[in-house]
Length: 384
Ligand SMILES: *Cc1c(COP(=O)(O)O)cnc(C)c1O
Image 1 (cartoon, helix red, strand yellow):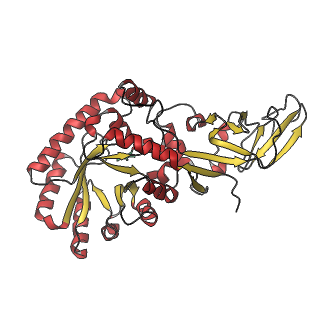
Image 2 (cartoon, protein in one colour):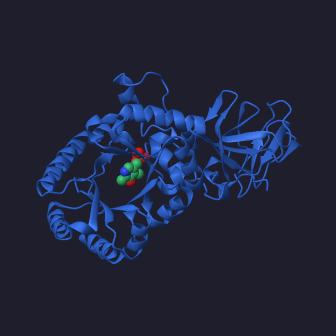
Image 3 (cartoon, rainbow, N blue to C red):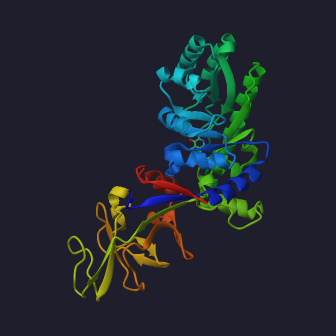
């Protein structure tokens, strides 16, 4: 089947990112690859085997449904950790499949104990501490209740981790809050250890924290955006650059490209409107190419008359409305455009590049959002 557009994942680029990040955080630190949100739009099923081929054996997801997809794609050696949503009645399934999960309420801890008891197998848990994010996490009081419960049911638990998450490590404006969180984490961790509970791993760092606050790296890092080749923010990049921590200028390279092709071409005359309504008027005789990608595929309608794509090494504008399934581009200045020519939506062609960020106005969280909105139905291929 010929799909109207498709995603390519570069294994070489991924390996480069992982090598840089592993070297940055240190060899003895476990690298957990965060693959929530369909592996940030890269596709869980295609991403996992590629990551495993590059030495990754630990994957973090948000929820049980993502974990079940990951489970089907990963090898026996790999471990899956759920950082967020799992219903209590799914906990036996998690235990059976050696999936570990966060505990941020005593309710889930009790349900995990029940599952462990009936399966005769300890629940692999991570105690998530409330250090200042104020989203999920055990407060001091809740932690004490959980500690007591764990001590009373020692055999039912394997304490895989003590963890927390930072409230915006990618921006210096959150510096004070992050410092407080680091302090709180250590205070609570000491308390837990004084109670005789020692976790296998202490883990707090996402990409931005690992790259900006080395003290947050500990025994394991949970790396999302950076492994896909994106800096969490410009600030993070500047910070790493400024500290001279990198040997080469661009240690992170984007691994995803999004491509389509020319479906058909057409010559139009000066004064003709193109597509629906009067959105685009040809100001001279022009050559228009149609590309079978539209807003139903994630190419936003807001890119009407605004978006750019690459064709034969040229950057060309969208001409007229972005339709549901197709768009029209002005290829007047590109020699010899014909049916079947490759069109790059995101990625490189002959030295030109369309970045993910160019899909909308600049903002820190833009890459995360644009990536995860790329439809999961698009086919994804791993290339070398
Ligand atoms: C998403 C997430 C991460 C990874 O964040 P990045 O900024 O993409 O590296 C780490 N930890 C938790 C708890 C998360 O939800």
